[in-house]
Amino acid sequence: MNKPILLAVDDDAQVLRAVSRDLRSKYGKEFRILSTTSATEALESLKDLKNKNEVVALFLSDQRMPEMLGVDFLQHAKELYPDARRILLTAYSDTDAAIRAINDVQLDYYLMKPWDPPEEKLFPALDEQLEEWQSNHVPPFQGIRIAGYQWSPRSHQIKDFLSGNLIPYQWLDVESNETGRELVELNKIDTKELPAVFFEDGSFLLNPNLQLVGEKTGMRSKASKTLYDVTIIGAGPAGLAAAVYGGSEGLNTSVVERRAPGGQAGTSSRIENYLGFPNGLSGAELSRRAISQAVRFGVELLTPQEVVDISLKDKYKIITLVDGSVINTRSVIITTGVDYRSLDATDVDKFTGAGIYYGASTTEAHACRERDVYIVGGGNSAGQSAMYLSNFARNVFIVIRKRDLSSTMSQYLIDQINNTPNIHVLGETIVGQVYGNEKLEEICLENMVTKSRRQEKASALFIFIGAKPVTDWLKLDIIKDEKGYIETGRDLFKYESFKKAWKLQREPYLLETCSPGIFAAGDVRAGAMNRVASAVGEGAMAIKFVHEYLAEN
Image (cartoon, rainbow, N blue to C red; front, side, top):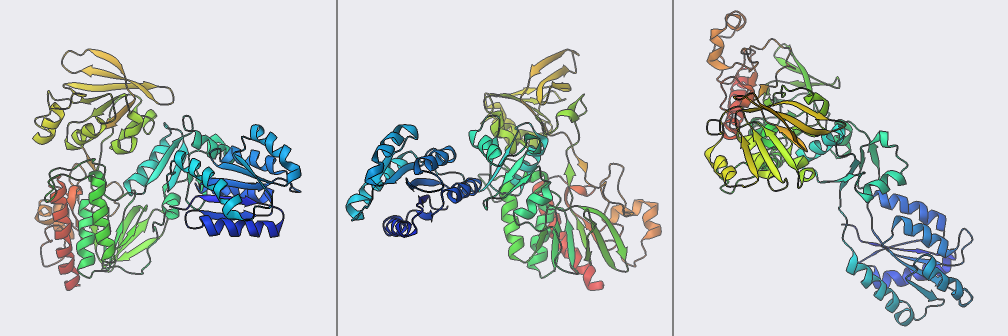
């Protein structure tokens, strides 16, 4: 965290040097000392300091300056830093002006020139003022700040992206947060250009796409090498496990992730049945640990970046990215996992990102404080989300088609839900329609048995229903089952097209697709077990088969 600032302004350079010298000698260890001979320059710098989220503890200004009087400078400075202490340096002839300024600009103190010796005439006064400031000061958040509207889909998208990539940020709702409004007004930002993302260096982006935000936060979206041994598409548990094992075993490895590492598991607020973590851990924490391991082994992570196609050239694979660039690789592991199915209810698309969210409970939980929220889905992800949201929301309602959760959710989660008084399960019920103006306001609940319908107030609706494989992007002739999951290994023999296309003397490896050297692991693979542990195991296993494939080629 940067030190708080003491800012001195005096048009007399010799006097300013003396002030700065004395301030540094006494306060240099705890505070950063800035000084200027120009009041106009000082005011300009305050705008930059505000954008950087810097803290000014005290202003020390001369009264008689040619650009503006000291009291005028302090009046302007007060608008940007109202909590900073304000001290005026005056000659004996200006004491009347200083006394008037006590009321005009809420001046905290005035000092007479000269102040020698400072130990008697300067430091005691400043000590008192700084002690008063410190007693009321709350250190500001250090990091990225997002100013926007709570119910803006783009705001949600950026928050979800940063959260998924484990990048701390502060959300500033311009409708309710004074700091957010100040930043927008200070930088003359049109509200149509929101959200605005402010960075620690004082720069900001207006309504940016995720790739711009990623580049600004140091993420890499361009491959740095001309050829890789293996490229992993998707950074869920299977992809991250493959990355760790690939990197640790000496393979030149790259990973491409379109949004944030962790996949669906990364959005889980708590995973309690993963081996070796008796107290559970969040999906984000599991992802963070895996990424640290992979990077330590030299794996290159490209995010946010999206694959749009794979083509073959001799025995090399050419991966085309959404920005038109390509990655050349000797083998590929597809670990794109699954995505939540869209809720089939009237007007859901209208409010997606504005009160309706797919697997984003951790991102939007604080906005649900003391409100009623609904979850659609009866799997473990829905249960984990309900438990997390129960810490914020007044009531959490789980809407499911079945009578109860017993056939779809782990017993440990059912027990936790039953023991949480503000979680309620609505069995044999569906959401038929949603209502609102700019954001979700109400939902229509339909009982599947009685056919009765009722409208309820809803601040948020979180959807965790089933899954569909993320394979629509795959244009290469890879065999998939009727639901779109990628077929691998001996299961390929039941397809006539495979028998005609496979020209190798050997059978496909256990996780190999119908295209030699292209493997699939985790939830995207037909027959996968849909568990974090099994996905991790398949990712590690895929690297073994990559080694065997590379050895024969």
